[in-house]
Image (tube, rainbow, N blue to C red):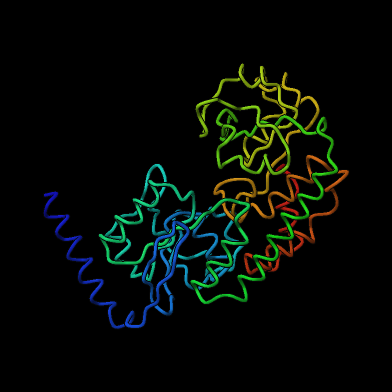
Length: 346
C-alpha cells in the first residue's frame, strides 16, 4: 500500500510539472535565503505558504498570490482583515511539529512556488530539497528572524514582482527597529523588568529564553524568567516555579487567562499580579507577540515597549495601530475595533 501511494504521488508530481510546463515556459533563477539557486516562473501568481509566518508575510506584501491559510483564522479575528483574505481556504502547513499538509495537498492547490520562512537550518533546507524534488514545484526558504524583516521584504519584493510595496514595508520595519534601538538607550539597566510569558488558559505553559516565541523580550531589554541551559522551546511549569521566579511583569495573549489571573488563588502571591502589571497582548487577527512569530510583531514590539517603559515609549497607540493595519493588513479600523485591540478584555 505504501508503494502504491508513493507511486501515485510521484505520478501526480510528474503530471503536475508537465501541466504547468507551458505556464512556466519563461523562467528565471533566484537565490533563496539558504543560498539555493532555484528556477521559478517569470511571473508568480500562486503561492503555497509552508507555515504561518509565510502566510502572514504574503498577506502583507502580495495578498492576491496567497492561496490559503495554514490554519483557521479565529472567528473574532476575521473582521480585522478584508473578507476576501479572511475567507481564504485552510490548506494546512508543511513545517512545524505536526504538519497538516502533504505533497498531495500542495499539488492540488497548483502553486507556482512554495514559500517557507523561518530558521535557515539544515532540517529546513533538507525539507525544501525533498519536497521540491517530490512535487516538481520550486520550494524557497528565507530567514524569518525579526531583525532581518527589512531584507526579507526586499527579497520577496524581487521574487514576487512587488518591489514598490516591499520598499514601503521594509522602510517601516527599519524605522521601527531604529526607533526601538534609540529609545532603549534611554532605559537604565536597573529598570529592565523580569518577565513571564503566560500561555494557555491556566498560564502555566510558557516559552523559554532563547525561543523564537519570546524573541521580542530581548529587543526591549527584558529578562525572560523562564530559562533552561539546554532548552529553547516551550515548556509547562508549576505554580510553585512561577512563584519562585516571582516576575515583575506577566504578559499573555490568552483572553481567558487574563480575566482569571486577578482572582485565581494560584497567582495572588506573584509580584506582577500584586502590582497590577499583568498585560494582555492584542491578538486580532494575529498575536502581536507570538502565534506566529512573524511580521505581525512589528506592531507588537512597539506595544510591548510602551507597556514596559511608558515614560520613554508611551503615548496613544491608536494612530500607530491604525497606520499599521492599513499598511500591512489592508484595512481601515473603526474606533470600536481599536478599542477591542488596545483595551484589555473585560
